[in-house]
Amino acid sequence: MSPRCKKARICTCPFTGDTDVVFKPIGIPPRDLEQTRLEHDELEAMYLCDHEGLTQEEAGTRMGVSRGTVQRLLAASRGKIIEALVKGRAITTTTAACRKT
Image (cartoon, rainbow, N blue to C red):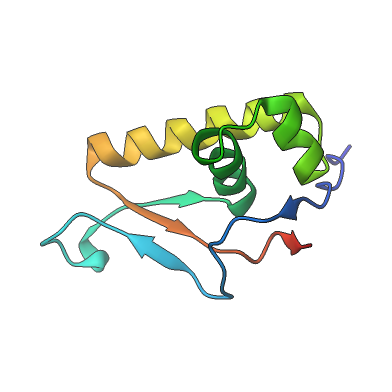
C-alpha cells in the first residue's frame, strides 16, 4: 500500500525562485559538506509561526492544512536546522513544492 499524495500547500513566504538555495558554513566548499534538505512547506510553517507569530491553527488555515500538519512540519524543520548547525552541514531549500496564492 502506498502513502497518500501530499496535499498542496499554500505558500506566502517571501522566499521565491525556482532554483535551490544553499546556506552553508563559511570557509568550507559546498562539495565538502553534507547537505540537509529543508522542504519549502517546512520553511513556510516556520515563517508563519516563528516570524509572523501566528498560532499553529492560524498557520494551518493560511497554508490550507491542519494544525497537526503544521506541528509536524515545525518539528521536522527545527530538527533539520539544529542538526545542520550542530554538525556543520549545508541547508538547501527550493520553492518548487508550493503553490503561490
